[in-house]
Image (tube, rainbow, N blue to C red; front, top):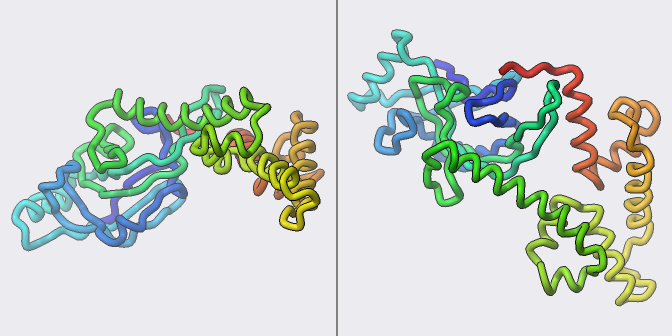
Length: 271
């Protein structure tokens, strides 16, 4: 029997949307455990044929028919008394995205699936389980909210730090805040590239190691983005599609903001 593990068109009971494309299923596919109500002591089978269909992440249940408790749960499913399933996940990355009503909500854009459970209440109505990096279940809504806020605050601190530390060069970042520099590389690749290129030029003169043409393209592309703040995704597609493609590579945050705003004008989210 097929179960829906997640529907990314709906805001779940914890107040965020779980993006199917952001899921890491490698570890799950090696051991596709099917639990009962996220209880690790109640392994009732395995999952098969995990796939995305439209907005839904689905999987096929395979009950352990040699286990009496599993057979009992299978009977309830077959007779229609149990219909829900729920993923157990670790959240790895979150973005705030605008909704059609103007409010911004968290979108979990990177996550790992650890297990999925047959539950009495479907995942988007309250049964979704979150784990921390140690594999421990986050027991209540406050812990889950703190987990999401921690990721968001960490990302915002990268922007804030690079703004406040405008006089810092690559060497000083490496010395005083190497972790912040690494986050900048991931979250603000253009700013990181500019710092790194300036450092190489400073210490290598004309430096055969610096791709100055690539650096110039990166800087010019950022200037285009800044000068076209009133352009939406559609206008970029019409007037400068190559520039939009460069933005996707060199300034992913700006690209994602445009894409989401454009998509929001066509997609209505069910609450």
